[in-house]
Amino acid sequence: MTGLEFTTDHWYLDDLPGDPDERNVRRQVNDAAWSRVTPTPTADPTLIAHSPEVATELGISESVVRSEQFARVFSGNEVPADMTPFAMTYGGHQFGNWAGQLGDGRAIALGEVATPSGSHQVLQLKGAGPTPYSRGADGRAVLRSSIREFLCSEAMHHLGVPTTRALSLTLTGDEVVRDMLYDGHPAPEHGAVVCRVAPSFVRFGHFELPASRGEVDLLRQLVEHTVHRHFPHLLAGEAADGPTNGTAGMEPVTDEVITAWFREIMERTADLMVDWMRVGFVHGVMNTDNLSILGLTIDYGPYGWLEDFDPGWTPNTTDAGGKRYRYGNQPNIGQWNLSRLGGALSSLVDDVAPLQSVVDDYPACFSNAWDTALAAKLGLTDGALDVDARRELANELLEILPLVETDMTIFFRTLGDIDVTEIDTAVTDGELMQPLHGAYYTVTDLSGEVLARTADWFRRYVTISATANQSPDERRAAMHAVNPKYVLRNYLAQLAIDKADAGSYDMIDELLDLLRHPYDDQPGRAEYATLRPDWARERVGCSMLSCSS
Image 1: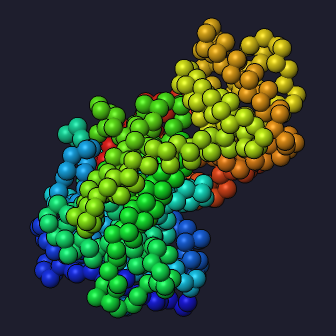
Image 2 (image 1 turned 30 degrees about the horizontal axis):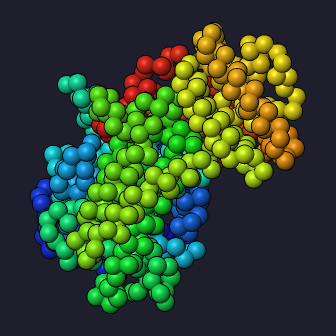
Image 3 (image 1 turned 180 degrees about the horizontal axis):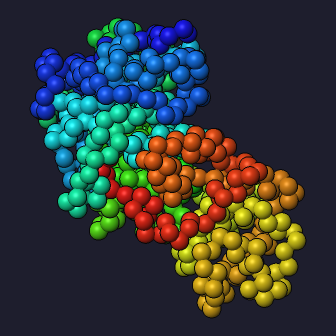
């Protein structure tokens, strides 16, 4: 590719009705799935980071990435030929309450493209200006939140967690005023644009909005588009890439297909919750408009990484009172959100019982997958091990870890480093626990009854681990393959933001490179795998975040 040239395919635009009103003014949009919107140009676009892997997937060479055209296009200053930018219409439940129409308030899909590998991807600019769905906002994004989204999108991918991707991070040259803590002190910040990439940005809320309005025809078209384009394996004889002549040429989906599709969404959502939980990720704002129909992690706002293992922790200041979206409640919210989606789909089927059955099956689906993930994190996957004993051991650990301030990532990673065949369980409790001391923020807190209970757990863990049919090296490799050494710790992201605010972007690239290999030991990078420093304990951006971005 000598320039930014794409093969466009317009799945969403071809299949679904658009808004006939092309005015870019805030309003309610009915009986339409999208509105045509052109990004608003910025003052001085400058590329400050990009993902080479995503660029390669899109067929964009490194020389093109470094071109002025690339910065213009992915900041919203230039629209490539054959692309039709648009914003999507959807609604959602926010913090448990129906919010009505929401939509892409500051996200504009630049276009839909077919990649050289044959995949379909939507290129979406976040922070490229207002849309009809912006409500009272300006459609812009600030540098701090854009850095967080860019880095975490790629970090999650390399951790093996389904996610939207990030192609680029562009500084706009404009200032954006934000009240970061919603405390009446707005201030100007650097503006930025992230180009997000995904096969689809369709969310649960896409189906909720037409259902709430009685727009049954639009609801059915949305379902048919999503099933035919992204779940064609559920349709007998359907081509892998779906039909090309829009929903008018699509065979209507049956009640049975809708149920099968809903079940797959349920399974993908349960698996996503397991992935979040296993790496210590807290989304922070699991509204139904922030859950992907494809089971991807979407919308990186006030997220955080669980450093101290506290199931009640939420990174979101807006959620600090009720803690609805706390770490330990994420699986439950997954089911609650699915029930809202099932309710939206109920108007399309003759019998809602199969849809309810899918929702009812979610707890078992999550529990089974979570048990498997915990067994892998503990290195207890040998089929010869007693399943009940393994499960009891894992569940007890989850009760013990919050008793003292324990770093989740370091604890599990260190556990994999320990050769259990060399552990003498006859030593005192204090001596027994010494190999794990590096995971505790204050080792002296590991005392009394807490020490006794933890040491008792560790003795039983050593005993059952020693019976597994694997060598120490095999055990270590297996555990390190699922327990990352490096995650995007909250304070690391904040340090990158601080440096970027001062005009230095090197740490963004450093973290991007580090997080490409989160499960590998990386010589010379030990400082990125240590306990959270004390200065970050209460600092805004490290301990709590707001939705302001």
